[in-house]
Length: 206
Image (cartoon, rainbow, N blue to C red; front, side, top):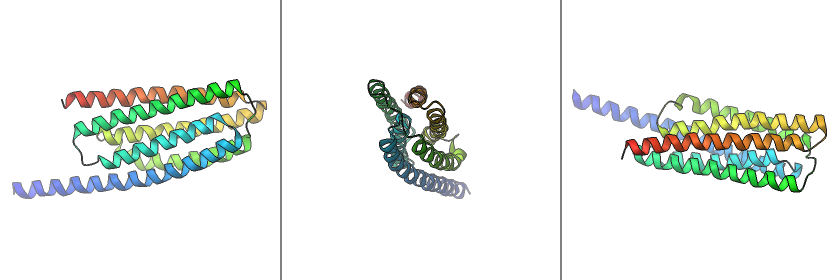
C-alpha cells in the first residue's frame, strides 16, 4: 500500500512538472514575440518606455527559459536560478536608466500612434501570460519568480499606454520619460523581491 502511495505521488509530481513546463514554454514564446514587436516599435517611434518594455520582455524570456530548465531541480538549485533572475531584472533596470539618460541628452517627441498600438498588443499578450501563470504563483521559488515577472509585464503594458496618451495630449516627449522612470523603479523593486526570496530559499537549504 505504501509503495502504491509513493508511486501515485511521483506520478502527480511529474504531471505537475509537465503542466508547469508547458505553461512556461507558452509564455516564453509569447515574450520572444513581444520583445521583437516592442523593439521594432521602439526604434520606429523613438520611445524610451517601449524600449524599456522590450528589454523587460527579453529578460523575461530568459527567465522563463531558466525556469523550464530547473523545474525538476532541487530547491537549492532553484534558489540559485532565482538569484540569477533577480540579477537579470536588475540589469534591465540599468539598461532603462541608461536609455533615460540618453533621451534626456537627446530630447525628441516619440510617435504616439506606434507607442499606443504596440502597447495594446503587449498588454493583451502579457495578460494572457499572467493568466496562465497565476495558478502556480504560490508554488516553489521557481514559479513564484516567473509569476512576479509576468505581473510586472502587465504593469509595464499599462504604463506604456499611459505614455502614449501623455505624448499625444501634451505633444511632448517628457511623459514617455516619466513612464520609463516609473518602470525603472518597478524593475528595481521586483529585482529586490526576487533576490530576497532566492537568497532566503538558498540559505534555508544550506
